[in-house]
Length: 521
Image 1 (cartoon, rainbow, N blue to C red):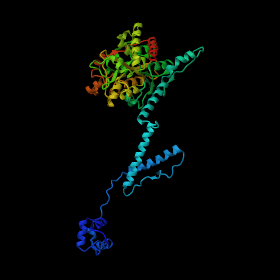
Image 2: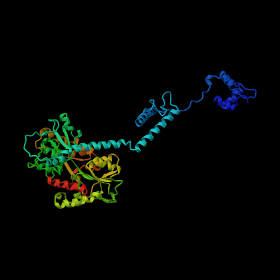
Image 3: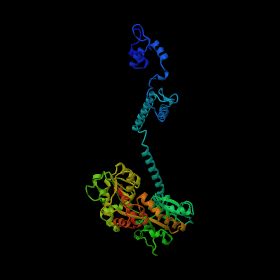
Image 4: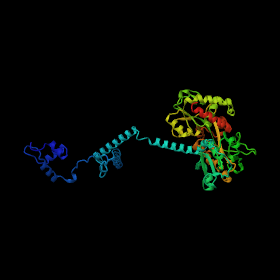
């Protein structure tokens, strides 16, 4: 055969065999004597006799476009690979934009299949390299790293804040010098003339001082402390502030040292809305009948537990949950004796108004030693307890209301227990120092803390109760119930067990015993 068959020419011309047969019958093809098709001559004749408007072009290849961002990512990957290899070998890796002879695809006028395949292979190689680096420990999870850095920064801050309380006794014992009275000047906190609030970390925020800022155009000086012992030590050493933040269990210690002045409630516009049950607590009445402390926040210490991991086996919620041997090594406790020791009293059946007796010390110490092997961690870093509960490392932990609220907001299945023995209830507030430098602003600080705006923030964001009765009207019953609160706060207050005031001697003895137990003695 001298030329092509119909089938061969159809493939050559990109047409169907039927179209070739029609062209052959119409005389538009040039044939050899044997009947085969002369391809070159037939192509020329077809071009001369075919109407260009009716000619059919071969279909363009259907290529799915590759997003330019993906191609740019490949460029970045290749450049990153080059820098990575340079750092590993200490040498140059060649021309920019190429790695091991592989050039980054160029975007423009569409992306070919080869370019798309190149992008895919390079990205897979990068993914494998990242996975290998993670397995080798060269990479860490960013979210976990940020959380750790935040926790370390806060622990560093708290360590510095509480340093005076921890170091004062050692310094006093270690410096054997004769003392004499010298003229002194009390240290003022930050800028004078703005009023100073000396408070727990977390309360030194704008949201609690909206009325104060609206009135004065600025915030008061907000100075955080790490613990009540730290605050007491610094003030006794001459640190000058206007208002501080004691709680009902340590109020008597401040009063006995004559550090406070009674509060003139007539100077507080929000005082008529304050719950009287919070005012009428033991040790809060000065000789002239006025209160030493204006109650601001209150809450409960109870058990936050994972409802999907802790099996109640049909039993009521109880403080026994923190002594459940089934969950040894998965129980969390607060490190401060001011929190955990009182829980031990409830567990041991010690009435809280008898907590300072010798018998009470022995009974409480016994149950806390019994619990010691079950506890995974003692810490005052509430965020670490919350993270351990979220991960399942802990199944139950002593906590405040706010922890359960925080974890529920994150979608973690937890409950804030209402122990049948009663939750431990605390009340904290604001007191004016005896030598407050700025008395007018001291009252404005307290009035702002008592405001409905502060109450809304305290309940909605921290999950704590607030002393302003009107603040509860801003929440529905379901939300309040989830927080362990009620539209009638008295119901919750009366169902709990109140911490009672204690002396400094008791506090010292308790702290010493508690530290020994935590250490395993």
